Each structure stands twice: as structure tokens, then as C-alpha cells.
Length: 329
Image (cartoon, rainbow, N blue to C red):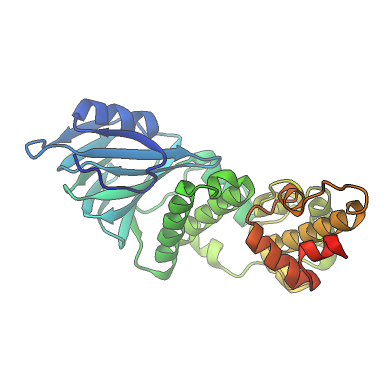
């Protein structure tokens, strides 16, 4: 077997040449299916995967011609982004899609049966997104309830600006999940990036909600943002997301973004960062003379800043001095 490194190698599930073991591993991580493979040249299956709060991220290859026949899952979307080789996908409503490395992928609908055939060199990054995660996210973006499956086209174009951005973000996400001290140890940042990936998927894929999603968002006046601002102040030390902020203001995420930009000149999460920086400074100023063991690192991480170099830069840009200078003065 080829022992070359693969994405998510820090989260191995299985590396095998046995078809039955390969079928069971993919069933356990993703979905039940029938697997047939031409093993005359040997099978070199690799599956790496990690469960996150909103979805499962994995890397899969077979190293042999294979075909997967998958019944409708009812509960999850599967987003297959081909990073090497190619696949051919068919689904029960008659749609077909061919995926090619870094240019196209496929979205498996939860209420459709799907058949996907892989070339021997095919490799994919696959997201398994529960319906609840994606449909709730779309509801937050639109400001109205989405209770039915999102009718994505089977093919996903990764060569467009939106598609390329989605793939680049997912590849960055995968790299960071493998990095010591990376996103795996930063729950606030990880949650925000997962939400961002779902927004990018909804913008890149073709579905009936897309025109509404990409239309200019309505805005609200400053007074309507007060519940959101109050919510941020009271929960600045929690892992806030745009979705939670939008719910606090009873508005869509799109309206939230447009209104914050108009009223404050900042995105909602940039405003959250500003509030957190102010809390850090207040704590450094009030505790420095009474707590000899006070450390900037402890205060920063308590307020959601896990990348300390970036935090120090943002702090200096905001207050004109470094956090350590605040401690010393």
C-alpha cells in the first residue's frame, strides 16, 4: 500500500486493501451502501474523518475502480469535492454529473438514491452535513423557516468564483484540523468557519433558494440592533456566531450583516471582536495591580482570542499599545 500522506492524516479511520472493511468503514462514517471494486490491481482505500459540531469532514480514496450504490439517507446531505481523478454520479431522478479534480463535485440529496463510480486515482474531500444543520443555517440566512430538503442540483461547479472559494476554504479547514494548536483547539473559530463553509455551499450550489439568498438584503435602523448589541455585551465570552446574533435580533443573517455595516461600518463578528478587545483591556487595567499572577495569555483566551500573535496585533491597532504595555503602564 502507498503510505503517502493524505488530508486529515491526524484523524485516521481506516487504511485497507479489503473491500468488506472499506465498505463497513464508509458505512460507519457516512452512510450505508453497496460497494463493488475491481481489485485486480489491488485496493488501497484510505478514509480519514473527524466529526465537528455542525458536520463531518473526511478524506476518501479507493485506489481502484469502484462503484458505490447509496440509498436515500433522509437525514444528511453529502458534499463530494473531487481533488484528484474523477467520478461519475447518477441519482434516482435521472440527474447525472461528472466530477473532476478541483473543478467539480457532487451534492447527494437526502431523498434521492445515488450511484457514484470512481476512477482508480480519484480522491475526495467529503462533507456529511445533517439536514438540521444546513436547513437551519439557510433559515437563519433568509429569515424564514425552511422545513423541506434543499433541492440542490447534483453537480457542484467548483470552477466558478463561489465554487473555488468554497473548495479553498474547505481545504484550509482540513489543513487547520491537522495542525497542532490549530482549529481543533479553537472551538469559537472552528464553529465560525463551519458556518462560513455552509454559507459558501449555499452560495455555490444551485437550488431554488439561491436567487433570494444572493439578492440585496434589507436593512434595519440602529434601534433594531439594540437587542443584538446587548446580547453581544452579555455573551462576549461565549462562542457567538452570526446565526445566534441574528436570532437575538429576530432578523435574517443577511439583514444583520447589511445593517451592522451601515450602522457601525463593521461586520457583526468584527463588532464582537471589538467588544472582546475592550473587555480584555478593561480586565488588564483593573486586575494588574491586584493580581501578580495575571497573564495576558489567560485573559485573551478567556475572551475568545486563541491566536495570540493575531490578538496582539489587533489589540495594538485598536488601542495604540501592546497588551503587555497595558500591563506595565
